[in-house]
Length: 186
Image (cartoon, rainbow, N blue to C red):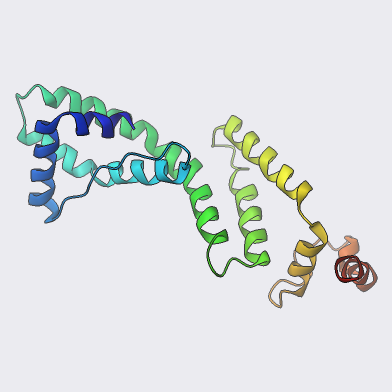
């Protein structure tokens, strides 16, 4: 956000960035400010900045000797520091939101997105504080969810059925599944 604000408040640097983009890409990309309450807009704002990294480098070369070069170098360093976080922490959440809120966001898609998020944030290379927060949030959602429905959606999916459950799981037996059906629909 700081980077976008800086460029929007320095018209000379912004004009130079637009000129470099026009020369390099044949089009200009706008720098967008994220909406405070919409974290997806933060993702897209930073992704635009990452897409413009080549333009920033070209700008640094073309503006050699200009005092804005030092500021652009500092901005590039900040962008690179955020790149890892955005790619591996925020992007899976953005994908899950877009998948679950689409027109085809059925219960099995929602369950698959939640399971994928849980699996993604088990990676030990990610920030463990973020992983713990995501897991806590997912577990809270799962505790509030109508679990029998989600389990039945999985069992009734012709591609999955009971293959995702352990062999020793009661969900491998018809009687237990039938009890879930009765709880859900009776």
